[in-house]
Length: 102
Image (tube, rainbow, N blue to C red; front, side, top):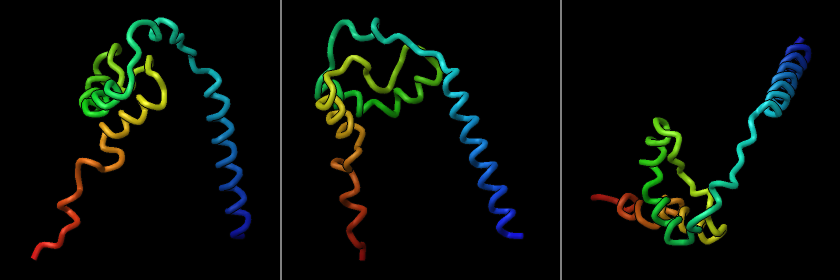
């Protein structure tokens, strides 16, 4: 009896995943060519965008012209600056929380 219930769950999970895979093909493809003109952001741009990412995320909910991550960037250096700026490696916090008080 348990194997029948488990096989039904597996079948339903596969069916849902197949439906999701089929529906992703219906998504619109956006052209990014107009975004890739002008200034190319590097490490310092990524650092700045990492610092302001929480505010951008909130503003992005209300305006269509604001993004969290700059589409016109130079690749790895921008991503590295964004990671450090957003606190992705914990460079700027958590130092005092590990000390025991007492």
